[in-house]
Image (cartoon, rainbow, N blue to C red; front, side, top):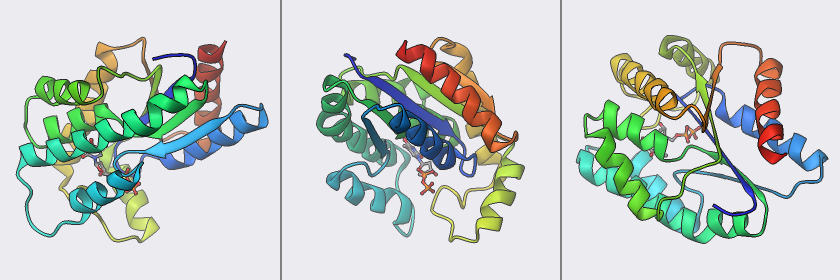
Length: 207
Ligand code: TYD
């Protein structure tokens, strides 16, 4: 897009995106950058309502309806929050973007990944991040982290291991297809090491 820097974090549930987003935000603020921290689904007031449906609705949601709900959240989020922040020259740090839809609604729910991606690109008028960090972690290790956190599972976290394995493979395939945008990080490594690797990439993108 224009002027600012747009960084998204992707990965399975329990891969440590939130921790890394927080560390990156602190580092950027210390360096005097103006940062907008946001997430999908749920980065706007409309998004909060959509998030409640997609994560907490009891019972099934038809796969195409689910994909449309995430795309609707995304369209509103980019139009009203992300694009304006980038135009002001700010750094946007965002938990999840369209790669999550391709991985979860595409590979996970067996919709066509290319169609899912095109749907989001239509919704956002083609917006793609400058840097996408993929925190790659074996789903069994991620599950152990989620169990230890002792929070109730949402609709997607509650899916079985084969679902999360397909999601992981889809993320890795997306990263391989766009090596210029993606930084793939081994999320089983110590938090500080991962943070340093992300900082290095963001620093060179800012330069
Ligand atoms: P997440 O953002 O990881 O929230 P928390 O850390 O609070 O659990 O979870 C959001 C869930 O939504 C996650 O399981 C992945 C799913 N999701 C999709 O299926 N498709 C999407 O396009 C996005 C953005 C998220």
